[in-house]
Image 1 (spheres, rainbow, N blue to C red):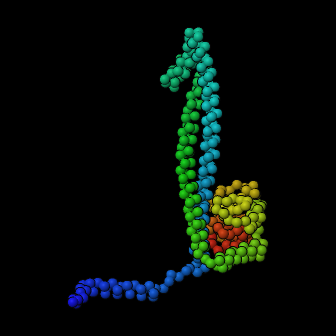
Image 2 (cartoon, one colour):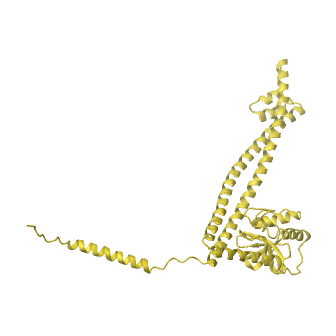
Length: 344
């Protein structure tokens, strides 16, 4: 006969745990269902963020340009010093060879001239003073030995200078690498944002940039403001010939430019050498603080940290290489915070 056992009832604690878990699951499901999905940023919001990143990239670009310029200057200085050291060492070797021949001849005759004793002395300066006082050396010998000593001191100083500059160069190269990474990082971040846009949104942004470039290049009214000088006019005309060339960080032409690359290149075409970076160009001439006093060809400096530069084109317009994703073009001087002009 089968036995009939009463099913075992779950404990009160177990029921409580299960009930609580079920309630929590329902609550989570309800919250997930009711939660609003994260909104995708609009095209205009993406553009604003990208423009900000491009501005930060340009700030880093001018610092990169400064480090690169310093590196090139140091390399030239080191090369010059090393050439001087090499020539100086050859001259010193010739002087020593002459003294060596004299020593060999005197050794064969059994006498050591006082000049050779001086050359071999452990304290040449002291011996030279005594020898000169005692008239033991001829004037020609004294001059020769002094020349050797002067050449030795000069070479020692030049080698120390070269060593210091080599250390500075290594530090500058490290800084250059960091600035380059900063620029590339900002540009990569901007590209990542642009990649979130749809094909239609990307096309719309590209069309906006094309319209801005065309209207700036073809229909801008420059008025009849004269140039500050013949060289300023020549520099401005050189910059005009580059309208439509793309902005590329660190570029100085002629396929592409960054802001200070365009201005330094253009002035070079006018036979005037100006510094490479916008910050240095801000100190390259006479500052003009009133926009009403600007002349065509004057440099115009923007932002508190002076990280952007262009040419004044007349009638409240500037000609410049704006930022990544754009080309050399005209724009209103009021599109950026104007600091001052610089008349070269």
